[in-house]
Structure formats: C-alpha cells, structure tokens
Image 1 (spheres, one colour):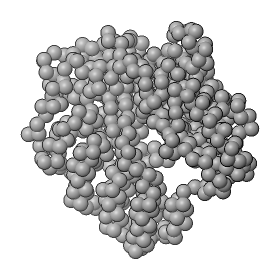
Image 2 (cartoon, helix red, strand yellow; image 1 turned 90 degrees about the vertical axis):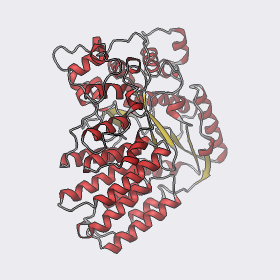
Image 3 (cartoon, one colour; image 1 turned 180 degrees about the vertical axis):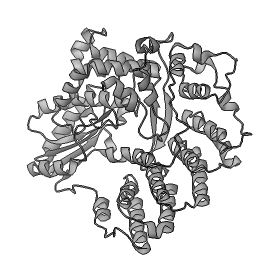
Image 4 (cartoon, helix red, strand yellow; image 1 turned 60 degrees about the vertical axis):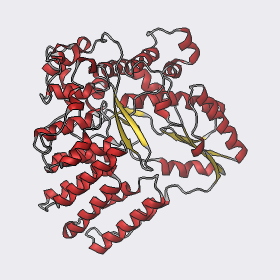
Length: 514
C-alpha cells in the first residue's frame, strides 16, 4: 500500500474524532475504474482553501485547534510526500536525538506511527543520565502553529539552496506551496491533527537536531516530538546547550517555551510520581466495591495535584484490566463521574460502557443522558467542540434523545462535525424536527465549497439532509465534489452505530498507539 493511500485512508482526519468520521471511502475511490485522481483533485480556480477547524481541551484545560484541509489540497500534499518519501524518511532517520522518527504503520491502523513502539523514554533516561550531573528540559512554543512554511525547504535542502532555487523542482518548495494552499495561503503554522503535518514537523526538527549535534558531538539526551531532554556534565554546559538549541530553532523561526525551560541537578525522577502511585496500587482482578472506590479516590486526588497530566486516562487504562461485572453499578457511576470531569476521555468511557453492555449488563441511560447533556451545555460555552462531538456521538450510539433546550445550544456553532451529527440525530428522531436549522442552512451555498465549512456542506448535501439554497446542483457540478459524490465518498458513516466487538476494537485502537 502506498504512502498516498495510507495518508488518504488513515492519516487525514485527526485521531481525536469518533470512529463514525473517517476517510476510508475516499481512499477506496482511488482504486475504482474511472476515478482519475489527478483530474478530480486538480487545483481549483481559487487555488487555495480554508481548512475545517475543530477545538478540543487538553489536560490542564488549554484549548487546541485541529484543522482538516480540503480534500483537493490534502491529496496534492499527500502525493508530494508519496513521490519523495524515500528522501523524506531518510532525512528524518538521520537524527540521533529523535525518539519520534516517523514510519509507515506496519499494522495499517494509522498512516504514520513512531519508529519506536511504546514509550521508550524511561529506559532512555536511565541510560543517558549516567553521563552527567545536570538535566536541561525544554520544549518548543506552540510548535505546529508557529512553523514557518518556507522553513520546510530549508530543512530538506538547507536555507542557502532553497533561497537560491525557489522552484518546485525542489520537493521542499513544492511541499511548502501545497501546505500553504490548504490554509488560505498562510505561511505561519501548519494543520494540527493530520499525519502529513507530523511528517513535516519531524522533518524540520530533524534538521534542527543535526545542527545541535554538529555543535555538541558528544551530546547525551533525546527529543520526543517538540520536547528536549539533554544531560550535561555541569550547569555551565547545560546553559551552553540551551543557547545552541535556541540559536538552531531561531534559524527556522521557532522558539522555546520559556515557562517550560529548566535546568535541574540530577538525579530526577524517571517518570511521574502519580504513575508509580497508580501502577503500584493493589487492585484485584475482580475488585470489591470499596477497593474500586479507593483506587478511584486516589486517581481523583492525583488528578487534582497534577492537573496538566493525563492522570485519569492512565487510571482508566488500568481499570480496563479488571472485571467489574459484580460491581457494575458502582463502576458505571465512576465512569460517568470521570466523563463529567474530563469529557475528552469519552472514547475510553464509551469503550467500557460497550464492554459491559456486550456482557449483558444494562446501562443507566437516564444517568448517562443527564451526564451527556450537562457536558454538551457546559463545553459548548467553552468552545470545546470535540468534547461536544463525542457527547452527541454517544447519544446516537446509545439511542438517547437530546432535549430541545440542549439541542438549541448546539445550533450556536459553525463546527462542521457538530452540524453533521446534529443533522443525523434529527434524521434518527433523537433531536426534534422543530429545531431551528437557519444557521446551518445558510451555509448551503457554492461560496462555502472552499471555505471552512466545506465538510459540512458536502456531507449535508450528499446525505440529502439540507436543501441547497439557490436550488442549484453545485455539489455534483463541482469537479472534485461531484466526482467524490458519484463514487460514493462519504466522510461520515451514519450507519456506524452498532454496539459490536469491532467497534470496541476500533475505539481502543488509538489508545494503544498513542
């Protein structure tokens, strides 16, 4: 399977989305007779487009924006990566500092994964820290959002060569141009959430790594994504390395996050103390109610003490290993409390609700509905659309009707994923037909095809959920969308709501990978 097919099939939509959103039919279309991809995805008249945006909250309650480029420009960028893949991956593999070198996923679960399976940082720390007395820790400020796209060819070909030869014959220049085309021509930042951006980001930082190592040939430490951990003999050496990292980043118009930069004397813990506390808790495979309550109490207290860490996520993964059948009512209440406090864990909570449903245990649907509706109202106010999307998806999965007052809150956003789910819930009778759809109906016009609502406009028209405003058939008349529609491409699967083992596996898939 080619890099292009992998990118279109598994590397396009962010992993943070529910499984009903995927691009499998897009990749399938490339193999169908009569589908000529280079014609379907040829550059539009405007040559640029706006990505669809989607917001979520990280641990610590910081918002992060995901962007999903228009298929025309994502295809072109993926093809450029495909055509130059050997050079690109060789470039990344030259870094001796990186623990996040990309590779094609051999298990075909995602397009691109880390070259090292599992988290090897604790073992690397043990090995590196025997060589020094001080530790430099730093990370790059707003990495994906601050990437200067013109630095892409600098990374691959050096700044001198790239500035001398500005044509697309240099694949770095081509990747720079195609990246900008998918974000309205902007040179600052690249889309967060796509596997193409992971490869591009790692390519830039691999060039930074090489320059750092050239100045400090005997350096000990590593970089994991945009985080550096460097071991030095003394504090002066650590400050010299810090200056080097700052200078090398500046060459690519990047900078460190001052708030997270520190130099400390060793020894330092090899992992978070909350990890050890939870891992070493004596939790029986078939726990009693009080044992489960004690473990949960510990997890909640640690989560309060370490608000920027994924404490509850780690705790939930531990609970996956126990059998709570005999205390299901207690466990269900714990799951719902976790969902209220951290709705970004909806994937894991859903997994557990489905697991015990498949065992024949009944769900407290009224409690679940109350929790989901509370989260919808609360997180709509915070603009955390990803958390809201998962709540609507769970309502669809478990057949929960969304009350009129809560549903009306959902109409106050232009988020394409929320809009699509609301239309499907309305179609399935889980949202009243009387819901005011004016805001979304006004998007159903040709002008939106290359704007940020391109995904909503395509799906709403292709699924037959909303009429086109001027009664034209602009979707089918459009070169790209017309072909996609005629070949059955859908970015949303409204039939994907069966509680099955395969859904269970799909939900946990990314939790094992990341």
